Amino acid sequence: MVRAPDDLFRSLGDPTRRALFEALCREGEQTVGALTARAGVSQPAVSKHLAILSGAGLVELRPEGRVTRCRARPEALAPLRDWTREMTDFWEGRLDALDDLMTRMDQ
Amino acid sequence: MVRAPDDLFRSLGDPTRRALFEALCREGEQTVGALTARAGVSQPAVSKHLAILSGAGLVELRPEGRVTRCRARPEALAPLRDWTREMTDFWEGRLDALDDLMTRMDQ
DNA sequence: TCAACCCATAACCCAAAGGTGATGTATTGG
DNA sequence: CCAATACATCACCTTTGGGTTATGGGTTGA
Image (cartoon, rainbow over all chains, first blue to last red; front, top):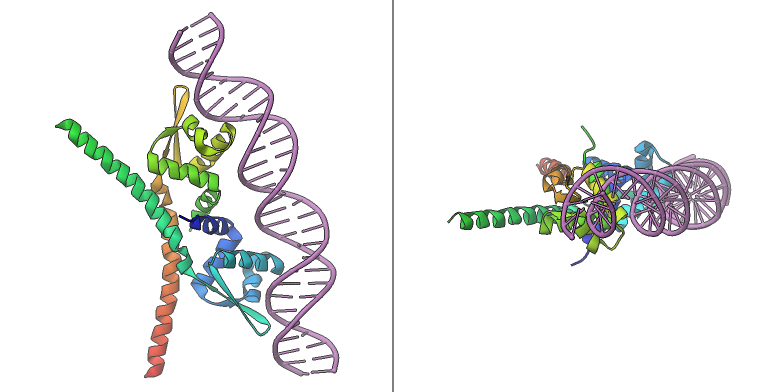
C-alpha cells in the first residue's frame, strides 16, 4: 500500500496552494499570470506552488505558446477521500465490535 | 466561511502525526507511552504531535492518574470530507454548465 | 514516604519550506 | 527583426517545524 495521501496532505496543507487549487476548481482553467494577479505572492512563488501541486497530480500544467494554462484535477482527491473513509470505517468497526461484545456479555 | 480545513490539512500533512492518528483509529484508545513505543521518535516529540492533533480536534487527550489516554475523533474529519466534495462539485458543476452550453449551441 | 514512573515543558539545533529579486528563455505582436 | 510578454529558474534569505536532551511536576506502588 502506497503512501498516496502523503503528498496530497502536504500539498494542500499550505494555504496559498489550497487557494490556488480552489480557484482552479471554482473558476476553471487559468494562466499562471491570472493566478499570480490575486495570489498575494510573487510570480516565482506561484510557479513553485503550481509545480508542487502538479507533482501531487492535483493540477495539470499545459504550456501553450508563451502562456501556461493550469487546470485542476479533482480526481486526484480520490485517495484523500478513501483515506478519510477508511479512518471513519475503522472507528465505526471498532464501535460495532464493542457493541457485539456488550450484547454477548448481556446474554 | 471559515477556513476550517486548514488545521486539518496541516496536522495530517506530517507523516508521524498521520501515523499516530491512524493507530488510534485502527486500534482505539492508547496511552502516550504506548504510542511512543512504536512512533520511532522520542516521547516529547509524540507529546508535541498529540498536542497539535488535539488542537485540530482530531484527538482527545484525557489525563487519568499519571497516564494520558488518547483517542481519535474521526468526526473531526468532516470538514475535510465536505471540502473535497465541494471542490469536486465545483468541477462537475462547471462541466455540466459546459455541457448545457454545447447542447444549446447544437440547436 | 519515597522512589519510580508517566508525561509535559523548556531550551536548543538543524533542515526544510516559503518568500523575494534578479536573470534566462521562449514566444509573439508590431 | 526587435521589444515586450509570460513564465521558469537561480541564488539567496528568513522563518517554521520537527527533532533532540534535560528537567520539572504530578501520581502511584512498595
